[in-house]
Length: 123
Image 1 (cartoon, rainbow, N blue to C red):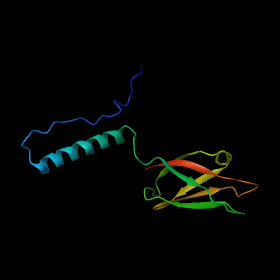
Image 2 (cartoon, rainbow, N blue to C red; image 1 turned 60 degrees about the horizontal axis):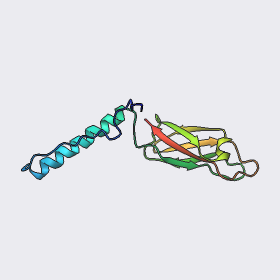
Image 3 (cartoon, helix red, strand yellow; image 1 turned 90 degrees about the vertical axis):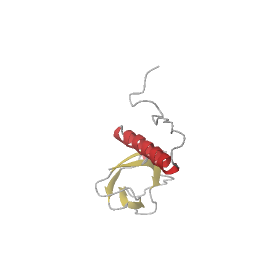
Image 4 (cartoon, one colour; image 1 turned 180 degrees about the horizontal axis):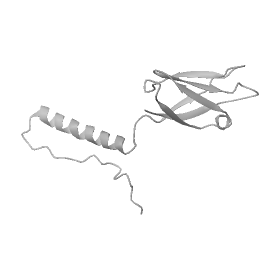
């Protein structure tokens, strides 16, 4: 079985806290361990900015749709992939703003049922 180059699937160590440690010290220690694990995951390319989706607007002549996302800024890069057949046939490009992004797309021609994409925000 090949090994995972990014390490174990749950790299957060279980560190025993000595009995008699004040409650606030235990909470601070556990918080520091969780934060260190989160930073290590970020350094390995993992983040929680994925798992989101958007659906393009429809209607005669609609050529852009704007979506709100608090993670987006003008320097963000949005990675996306279609999850419906109509979305796979669409030509789109994205412009990022502060707290939102606009997806420009070809106008509706013919029966288009659903143009849905999953996306993740980077940066």
